[in-house]
Amino acid sequence: MRDLLFGDLPLDNWAAMGTDVAPWNLFLQASVLMAKGDRDEAIKILHEIIGLRNLESRQYLQAYNVLREYNVPLYNDVIIFGIIAEVGMEDGWDQVAIYADHSARYINYSGSMIIWEHPDDSLNKQVDEILEIAKGMLKLMGPWNGRRPAAPGNGYARINFLTSHGLHFGQAATNDLFNDQQAAPMMYKMLEMMKTLINKNNNTVL
Image 1 (tube, one colour):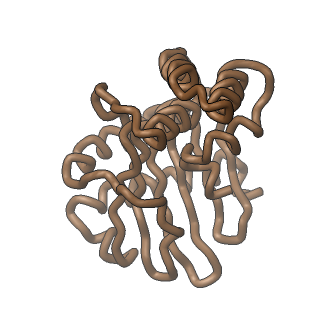
Image 2 (spheres, one colour):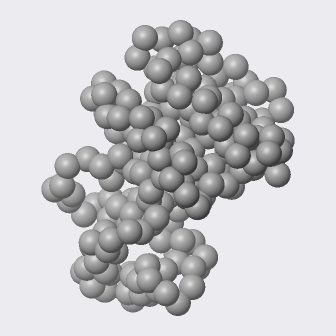
């Protein structure tokens, strides 16, 4: 499930998961064209996906990530599509994800999870506050140029910023992030989101 949070799967993998409706069918077309060596047409389709309105944030992330994978220049401003906070524990890690489309996820270290697909607007304010904090934090760090790292180990935490121009993140010992002047507001907001999701689910992590 962790891999599905980031919107950065290989094009073939993402295309194979979908249906025959947009944008899944467009990802499939792009995948087929890439396999045939028709890179230019595939890139046009990926740009078409980015131009569609009201898609899930992870769909936009997938399109942008594939464009970067194929070294296509991006000329637009950086767009923040989501934030994922990961806290490493002895038996796994807790992950809280929020997205610009106002959906959210909580994955417990046990593997249980809560999925919020924006059935109403009750979490919008919390999500928007987190994204606003992220704008300021993003100015302090550059993009990560390598492959997405594995989840943080026991006692460490990471804040992932999912953007049109790649993954940005900050990582430190969990206690240090909760006490850091820049990171603490984000960590506490994500902790609050985790509690909200649990309460929304009648205090049960499925």
